[in-house]
Length: 186
Image (cartoon, rainbow, N blue to C red; front, side, top):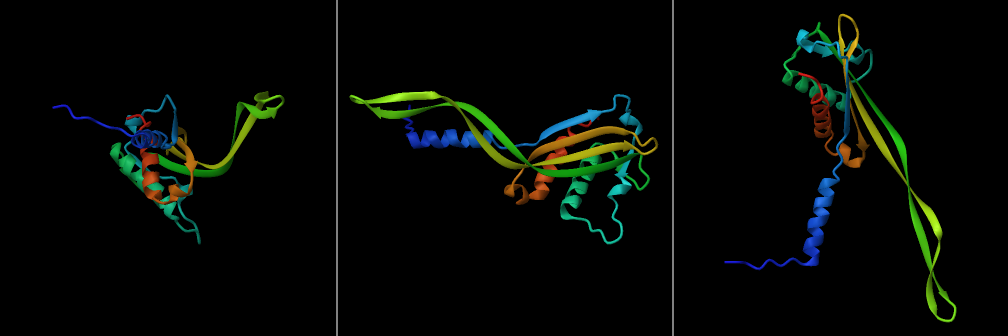
């Protein structure tokens, strides 16, 4: 039995809009760099670099704890063990800065004119500029040989930061760190 399927324009609009919004969900851009001479099979343990240790009246922020926890989870998944005197130091940095995006697009302006009847006239081509401001966040994770103090691998996530980022910060950090560590050679 064949059933008639009826789509209204509203239903079609909702389907297109939903697929567009899901397709535009922003994920951070991930980059990594590797020292080609690094032999990761020679490393068994990891620990956080001494510069990440707290001194005096400093405190451990929530975001810093989330990042450390996510890194530790990913390093354990890769088969490394946490140690006080590790083979690999892990260091990370977070940068947040405001950016401006300028898009230019050609445009033509039209106007109505009355001269022996109405008519539409085109003006000279013009260039429209659309200026938007946003905040960009960068999470940089380094793996450093403890004996030689050489950088072996660097993973970077770059993405837009907005109010929704802070709604579930721990999950966003976990996702970004997992994407970064997907680039780490096994």
